[in-house]
Image: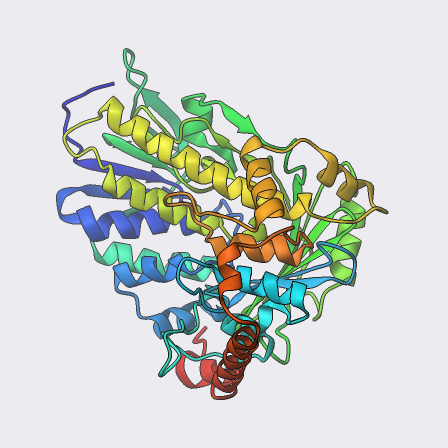
Length: 502
């Protein structure tokens, strides 16, 4: 497909976090060149499960010029330093995927190789003793800290928990101030070019008509343009990730807001807990083959930390992705592009990266097949690498009394994941591939946290004499302990700098 028709009008179908994130970023960079309209219906709700994020969301907000404390105030936000996984290996196990570094690499040798050597020689330290993020999270501490003073060590790396609906409202104000037009209405008909099949115009229920050269589909699971109109096929990954239901319910705030997300495994899936300033977000992700809807609802409500503020809201989904997330003149973002369960809080990140990718590939002089193909190649690669990381959590479980978890452990896995597992199992090696989202440290934490201890470590870790290795661990431990002791209490920090104004 190669057309020389310049892109002057962009229509965004659907609001919510996805739609307004797209509107904000496109208007920020291309607003003066484009006529941008967003169509959403106030009568149609949004899924809204993306209340926990990962650190790149800070870059997104910074690029838009949104002040962090103002963002936290407006969205009821709290700080997130990582995700604690409970019962994922064996019942009673806990570990954290903590953001940021662990320990300190020496030369070409990653810190975890020294830790593995220490484990074999009797230096029995918890791996997370050497994570500043973990120590701060478990002690409910936070304040901005780029580096640990007087050391080469990284400081705290954080993301957020926040109310996705309030975030969408904040971005709506941002976008409308930059010229984005909003139409509140429902789309009754989608018109296509008789020869190319491209979307040309939308007819709304009230008779309004809206034309554009480029359409961004943020219509959720429905996929009004990418699925219903253009019939783009879907790659179903439920044979690898069998959970297909979720229940979501808010509850009252806790006495203390933890600066981390909790993901708690149960017999048919897992439960999330996301602390906000004005409420807690809770949900249960499960597979309907192993847990009924009534059983799931009972389990969710019985395991809340605070009283529920409503009835559980059901969400049905199929894990997978659209084979082309950009087809003809339609780009799918958010749930219309695919769905990976929120285990590692990647939903809003995939929206963010899709938008940034669109900005980089923007077809200002017309649609070009090579550009569209490259966008789709990058999108597929990103989805598949995140998919593998999520599957890893399920695969490494050691539960033998649960049919669901046995099925997750024993089912076939993508070759791309099996290769990583075997590499780490035999050598302790793990490598980040090009621009993939999750770091080597992230992979190490899931491997080690769920009981996969490598058979070997890198020989360069033997270059440090035993006494120096002991001193190396002792100094790191002392540095992290003293640093955490000097940090502010998380709740006190929010009260002083970012108290919610809802």
